[in-house]
Image 1: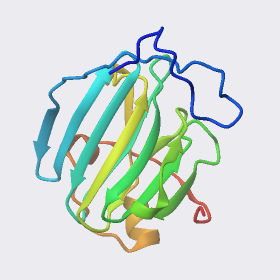
Image 2: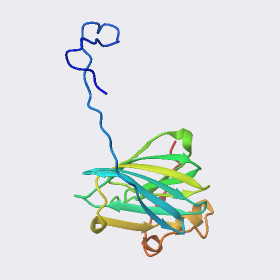
Image 3: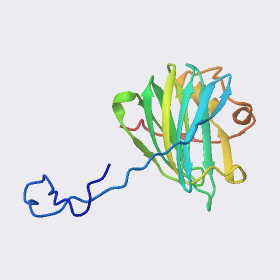
Image 4: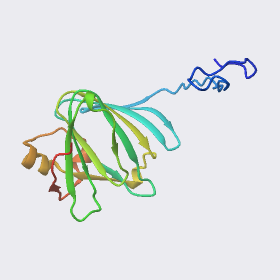
Length: 183
């Protein structure tokens, strides 16, 4: 609902008594989510328009998703958050010589985290977990690169036998250097 431009309505902000209220059109987005399901859980593409993609995934405890990265010009930055559950979140710059693998435990109280487009990202579900991604840049399979850090999970985090997709299981191992835990 909008107020007519000539309604004379005023903004209810201090110091703005003489400013008219801006009118906003009512917008209804009616897009049905696309769901991809496998043994790890599921991924829902909730909204996709141009370079904006909203996704939500459910991962069972013990699932590792990643490490994924898209090369320019299809690079994809992500705002991520845990809706429920707990994860061990990982990022690495696959193009750097040092290849430091950063990690942080995340839960619902940790808010949104920005994963820059130049970083490969992945997470290990410590519990059954719902996870949201707000992506800038569409998914481009031809530009995607997958890396395995399963050897690192076992050696540095005591995680053995993580459930992974066939694509992630076939990914080339990425030699990484352990970095301090992020805060």
